[in-house]
Image (cartoon, rainbow, N blue to C red):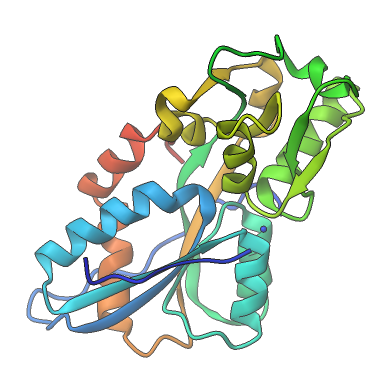
Length: 254
């Protein structure tokens, strides 16, 4: 594997009515490096997409930088070199777009839904969202600054629940890790994270999740030094093959 994987430290919900950069003409040569900043919840799917893209374009190397969306947006606005940004919310993408750092309108490519994750066997006896108000349980949430945290706050507020978390994490994969290791009785993550964890965790769906469906936008960045290959990568994400990888991982349609 020639790709570098970097994990960094993640707010909001929807951006719609967007268009993506067009794919390069068939005569365009795809070469060089494409640096993609992507939300932590895209770790598995974008790894698979990058692998497939590199197989089709062996002269391109995709470098993936995963982290909390708000942290990634801050890095981009601060001048971090990147070609593509895929965020877990419209609000975090807006931080970059409003600074004039995207090319065209970001395109929403998938949606995601919150789900309760518990360690295998559910030792804490978690039954639903109301358990997050129980101070006797070990509970993990995303910090409100990151998309999963903003979505969690939205569902708690809507349900009239005052959550009592023991830890607030800076990206959703950190919450998932706490659950996988049995350090907490439950965490609120995305449905895709529960699926990615396999038998290491169990998922509990709850009806309030439908009130905070998160939309993920992707955009070409104006500072990109490899726009042809970066645009081709975005086109691959939006292609039927890319959508299949994302759908199989549990993401919903835009």
